[in-house]
Length: 293
Image (cartoon, rainbow, N blue to C red):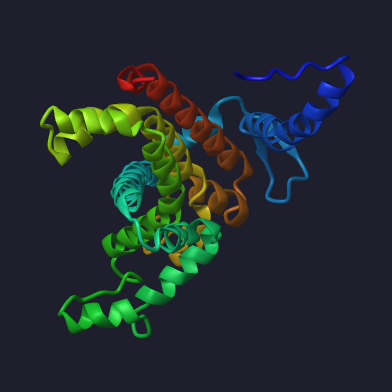
């Protein structure tokens, strides 16, 4: 039986909600409104003068081949990171759910990457795969693989995908494990009595009951791939070589802070926000239909 908290007046609930509302207004709505405003302005490099240009910044962005290339890189990057962060996490959670001895040690070890900041995670992978000094890079060279992500764009993209997915793996693992442990054991025992094997039980019982968790993580991971992987990209490749790892969020930073194209950068950030909102809406409109609550 759930106990509902009832407040005597409106003042205390408003005070409790006020900090969260203030943070949301200051760190989301205000920057978003400024991005929309500056996307219609042409500024000098120092921001001392502005001129209203309407949608010219958006037209320039879509006519830029480098932006279209970055859009393609972002699509490959986000899909790869989402899949690579979710599938191994589900496999590890299933294995952890069956571990009896040293289960706490095993689970704690899998959760550790979540405590690492994205930029630090990028540096860790940078040292592992750095040509000449990286342990993994030397092993690959010993196996006859010409590894040099500094010069090879495909290798650089693969490296940042793995690093970003590794950072998100622990988050997904935690939710999948919690979802697995919430499934009633009586359902699995009933399926076993009916003759269902391990894989058949997983496919017909576990996966449907785990679908709300899977859908939630799918939405979170897509947003993570678009917005929260800046630190990994910046620490490992800086968008290179030859823009091979320049995803949209990094291009917004580079064009605005390095290229000093403030109007174009603002237009890119507005487009990125619209893309993520549209993707989230599509996920809730179509993917959620397959979720069993």
